[in-house]
Image (cartoon, rainbow, N blue to C red; front, side):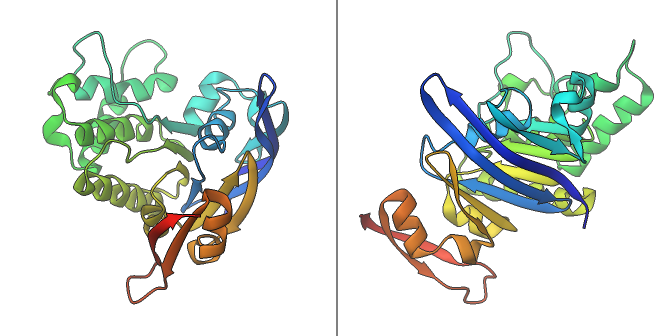
Length: 260
């Protein structure tokens, strides 16, 4: 299996505060790796360092074997899609089609081509939101907006997709829809996905591997069964939990009991 992303020893500081401390991580094509950890553990900072939004103090992110620091902004945009955790806020009344078309910006030299429009239409169809194409983004629900942000990133035709809390502020139905769609497109399009997520049960269900951060350091990495153990969760989150093993679901299930 091809490796789309490699993180080597990334460290980052906000002033005197160490946010990341020598993090190593690899993500293969067709794989979802979830980044978990308490608030302030460095999840979002890691995504921003991978996407070159933040410059690490040390270390490097390699995309398809290429040092991201040596790529142009256009090359980065063609390779990495970023789905932020915030909802869509637009001053101008953009339609869904127009907003997703912005994902084609790295490929547009002078005017929008037929191929650009076709890719947008195919992306909307793939995500099951074609009927929203002419709706204004400001009129959509939170779940619909999250799918539109996903569509915009997918329209970039990236090899690596970074998702920052993609289920935040969504109800249970839309959480499952967004993550199910993500898992489907990862397999069909051989994307490498790094997803920062709070919900450990969703991480168990939809991730191939889990990377657990504690105070900016990589505490554990492996399958959900290997990483999300009662001992690890107690150590990192300071919470007592009961982890129920796979009973036919295909993934473990975590029940919080009390603060440790």
